[in-house]
Length: 274
Image (cartoon, helix red, strand yellow):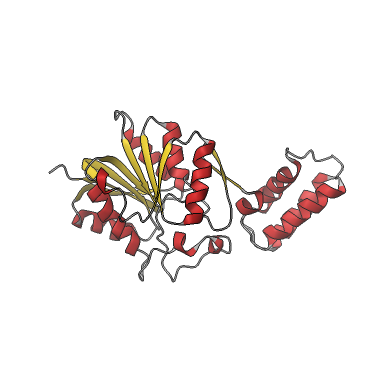
């Protein structure tokens, strides 16, 4: 019965150190069957073999999203594949913060720097009337963003290139810059799942991981109109340093937003109107 198969999978995943063994076991069963398993249903041998293969991969700490080739973000179902950053649930709050800044703005122009799979950009484009432009350097991530964008009507204008250099022709005309850039410091302890994300999507450069985030604070200041807003995700220990950098670069009303655990999670800063 599927109840027994899921129980055994849950125990195996727990022994492997998976953080959510029950949820992952059930998700993998649903992935294999294409529907939610009924506990008392008999298990078809071919389905059980696929399920055990999936559980074996998850026990080796292959990300669930890679096994299922899908990641869920807000209202989106996005493709997930090796070589592309797996977007995390805490980033949904960063999108909430971004949406709050453009609520009531007529036809806002939003730029998403380091878009990865396109999760943030596509969320904003599908939930608002904003014009959204997103930049990504990685070829693999850019191609994934193109496919994800097409799934939702290609509402986002995607640009492949360096987020520090692209979009000069939009300088001083952007209402909101949002970004979840690479920000991990080289000494940071990462889970086996996170270590499978591409290094260029994780590590921000420098001893503190802030080399690229600082460059993007500067780039955001160039792109934003006077009074425009920057929302940038960061590590929970990086808030004070980024607030200081933002103030030094000409931002005002600088603050840090907290995630559901109370940890500093994103920078919010307004470009001075002067």
